[in-house]
Amino acid sequence: MAEPPDVGTYRWLVDARCRRTRSSASRLTWPWHDAGVAYGVATAVEGDQSAAMNASSRCSRRRFLTRSGTVAAGLASAGLPPLAFRRSVAGEANTAADLSWTARIADPDIRAGVEAAVHKNLLPAATERVYPGHFTINADGGGYGSDTTWPGLDSWQMIGPYLQLGRTRMVLDYFDFVRASQRRDGNIPFAIFNGATRPGGCLRGLKYPDDVFTYRPPQREGLPASSQETRSWVGLFEHWQTKGYPLTTLGSICFLLTAGEIFNVTGSVSWLRERLPSVEAAARHLLTLRQPQGLIGGAGFYIESPPREGCDGVTQCYAVHALGALAKLCDAAAESAKASEWRGHAERLARDFTEVFWRGDHFGEYLHPERGLVDIHGLSDVNWAAVAFGLVEKEPLQRLWARLLAEPGFWAGGMPTQLVTKPFAYEPWEWQRSEDCPGDPLNDVAAMGRVWHLEALACERMGARARLVESVRQVCRAAQEDGFWRERYHLKPDGTVSADGSRKYCEYAAVLVRVVLRNREWFLA
Image (cartoon, rainbow, N blue to C red; front, side, top):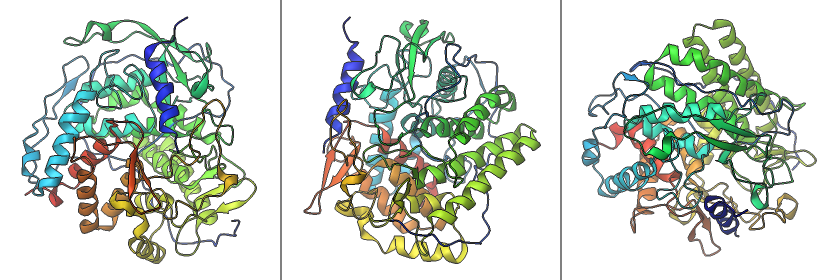
């Protein structure tokens, strides 16, 4: 049987893009506050969009895999023309957003970057060709496939801007498609391929036919006929890595965050109540990954090479954030007992994280099963995440923030934000590549949009306007040549960065639009 073209493209790209101590933590006792999303009611969505849990799946499986991102804020603020949000009923066409606000961005480099992000990246990716709600994570549908879906980090980062750009109906349909891929144990895949895809190579973890599901899409006027077809799909839950299980929590956490952002925009309690059991099921699966220290296991949250074998600090921060957001969703659905339960899980995880990871003026990177807390690569993205999601405060926060601002390594080569400040310090025991999917074992030691997103959120929390604006300017300048970004920017020994990985990748574009719209008073004239 001939391999489907998109699968071949994906395998080629993954191969191509993958180029290239122990310590006792001191215990902190300052109070921790819930870092969940503050939800506001802006519009209302009514009507059903059916989706079902994968009926062909089994309850007991290997650790699940996924990917993530961060929170979008409300849009009500003086000075910004409304982005055409309105009451939306399932089945209506998307709302055309007023994009005239981009012309009011004062800085010419930032204005050009945001316009490119919207018009050359995000809007062209929203094709809805294979089902209503589908969008690609590359502007031209290349790289990671024109019919694939990435419910983890990539798609979650993009739905925030789409909601703000008037594509509410599309995002609602996207959510229901992902919900249809959910296993009976609550797990959400970090990638979904067409049903003809078979295991092998970088897809060695694909379970066929166990994770195949059939999706009958809702009928939507004005979309390609191909989007209305009933098709079979297969979810990818297990990574090719054999050292730990990177991306294990990514799909479930991003599913929670996606539900939160949708409710933040729509305010539809009826929509929320119908889907809350599915969202809670994903969260309960997340809790099955808890380790004896109380931490969430699985390895790297949004990186795979190196895998961060054990418990990634970023995973803990995102899990606290997502569980807090779920508690707020339960509050909105008048489920106070459930809200209290989920808030308790978030608070417990926050305490366990700080007890294990805090080093006096910063956080360690990950907890290795044999070597203990790993903290040998300078400062890491874990610190931005802890600040962003409120896991550190008062005097410890001030000590940490001072260190972060004094560290030039995060912007090495002029591109925010590097994963760690000492990227050449990784030891061979931290590496892992599989013969099934060869490549650079340190591929993710780079500047990436997902790390910049955490830094931006941290800057917002701390009111660091000058740093945030300058980081936005640097990101925009990276796309000056053609209006597109790459997935990774690797630091080279000479201090410059090499733009690598997937071309026309939408991550930086999505984060850029998020950051500017969340802080429009800092950017609009």
